[in-house]
Amino acid sequence: MTQQLLMNNVPVLVDHTPGSRTTTVCVAVGSGARHDPENVAGATHMLEHLVMSAPLDGGPSLSERTERLGGNCNALTSPELLVIHAQMLNEDAARVIGWIGTSLLRPQLTAATLDRERQVVLQELSAAASDPSDAVQDAFLERLFAGHPLGSPVGGDPESVARITVDGMRDAHRQALAGAPVAVSAVGGLPAGELLDALAEAGLGTLPAAAPLGARPRHDPPAVPAGTPERWPDDFCWLLAGSRAPHLGDPRRHAYTVLAHLMGASPASLLYARIRNDEALAYSFQSWSRAYSDTGAWRMLAGAEPANAPRLLDSFRSLLAEVASEGPGEEAFPAAVRQAVMEVVLRAESQQDAAIALATDRALAAEVTLPEQEIEALGRVTAEEVAAAAAEVARDLVAVVRPEAG
Image (cartoon, rainbow, N blue to C red; front, side, top):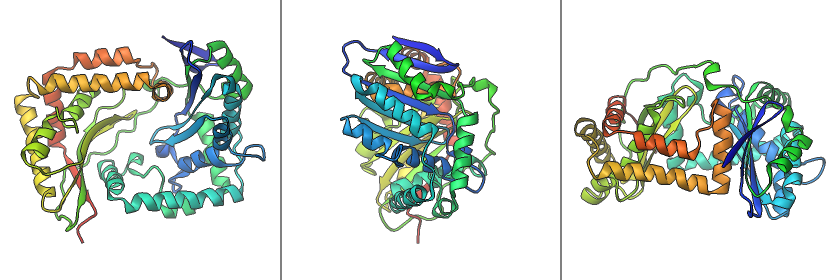
C-alpha cells in the first residue's frame, strides 16, 4: 500500500515491500525540455547528463558509484520532467540517496565537464537523426505543436547544444531547482523511516514541493491544420500519424489510452487485423497516447515499404472512421480495455516502473493516480467515448514520414 508522506512539504511516496532486498528511489523534478531557457534548447537534457556523469566530489560519477555497488542508476528528460532513479540493495540505499542529493543539488558545472558531455550529447543527437523511426517522432511533434515549446526536440539540436555555456547551465540548474515542483518516491524493502532519514541527510527536503496541477498556468498550443505527406520516399520509411489528445487532468484521456490499444500492435487489435493480417502492409507498428499538463498527443507509428506507406495511411484513416461511426466492436473493445489494464498492472508490479510512475505523477499533479484508481477509470470507459476519441483523431489527423521524399 502506498504511503503519502511529507518531508519539509516535499511529497514522498513510499510503497514498502517487506522482504524485498532492493529498493528503487526516484526523484522527479517538474522542469523539462519545454522549460529550457530561450534559444538554449537541450539545456535540461544536458543537465541530466551532467548530474549522471560528472565527477562527484572529485571522484567517480553518480552512475559509476551506484553501479560499483551492483545497483543501476539512470535518468531521463521529457518535455515536462527531469527524472533520476536508482535501484540498489537496501543496505546501500542511504549512500546512493546521498549521492543523488549531491549530484542534483551541487553538480560539477565546469567547462571541462560541459565540453565532454556536449560531445556525448552531439553523438546522441546524430544517432537519433540518422534513425528515421526516431526522426519521424521529432518531426511529428514539431508539426503537432508548431509554435509551442512542446514542439522542440527534448535534446535540442546541434546548434542550440553548441550555444550552451557554463553560466547558462548554472542558470538552467537554478531555475529548475528554484521553481519546479519536486516529488520523491521509493518502492521496495527500505522502511519509510530509514528513507526519510536518508533523504533529509541528502538535503532533498530543501527542494520545492509539488504544486497542484490546477494552480499552474495553462499554455494551450495554437491550433494546427490537419495534413498528410504530399510526396512519399522511394525507400523503406516510417510513418507517424496522430493528433492532439486530452491533457493530464482531463478524464477523457482514458478513452484515448483504450483507443491506442485498439489500434496497437497486439494481434487482438483492429489495426493488426487490418494492416497486418488482411492487407499485409506493415510488420512493425504501435500506437500510444501521452498526456501533458496542458495538452496531449495520440500517435500511431508504422514502418512500411514505399509502395505500402500511402496505402497504410489510407487504411488507418479508414479504420478510424469506422470506429468513429460504428464503434470499436463487441470483441475488440473489451480486449483493448483489458490490454490497457494489463499495462497498468505490469507497471505497478515492476519496482522501477512503479517508482518512476509515482514520482512523476505526483510532480505533475496534485494527487497521485494509484494503479487501482487508473484501473477503475479504464473500466468506466465506454465504447461511445472511444468512438468519440477516434472521431477527434480522424478529424485532426496530422501525418509525417521519414525519410522525406528526395
